[in-house]
Structure formats: C-alpha cells, structure tokens
Image 1: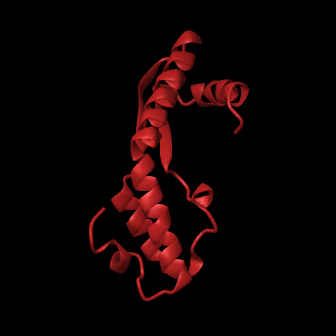
Image 2: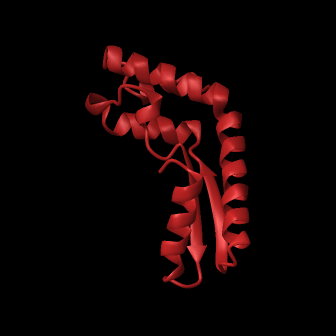
Image 3: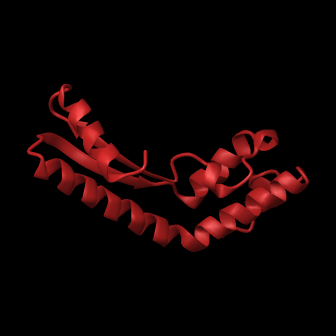
Length: 116
C-alpha cells in the first residue's frame, strides 16, 4: 500500500480516517479474491444469458481498485459507511444487450439465480 494512504483518506479526520485506512488495507489484501469473484460471476451471467438464447453485445466484469476505493472514501469523509459491505460497486457486472426488450428477460434470469 502506498505510504501516503493515510493522508489520502483524511489522516486528520480522527476515527473516520483510521477506519477508512483499515478498510482500504483490508480490501487491498483481498483484492485478488474480489477480482476473481467478479470474473466468476461475469462468466456465470454470460452462460445464463447464452443458455436462454438471448443475444448480447458483451458481458463485462469490473472490480474497484484499492486506489478507487481510497478516492471514494475521501470524497465524503464525514459520511463514511459503517463497513465495507455498505460500499457500492466493489464488484460489478454489466450486460450490454442488442435488443431493449431482452432486459426484462435478463432481469428475470438474474432474480431467479441471485438474491437481488
């Protein structure tokens, strides 16, 4: 982790800055796990959509980097979430469909397969 991490996320902010620093360190240590999770979910979603015969342009998976997490936490230091679980979009999957009317079918597939 970069040595200036503490100053990037509000070193003078008391407990909020310390908590954010701990979250970023913890996330940095587990980043490869999050990234692997993102890719596995991306592959599963692609397989599910293909198995239903839905045409799509691409299925993308993206994992927030530790640097992006640092920037996110520093944008609103007084409004820090209570835990890492409350931080949105650490791992995301996006499906780019060819036909808008397929969005409802994909939504139904995802609701059946995942807790959404």
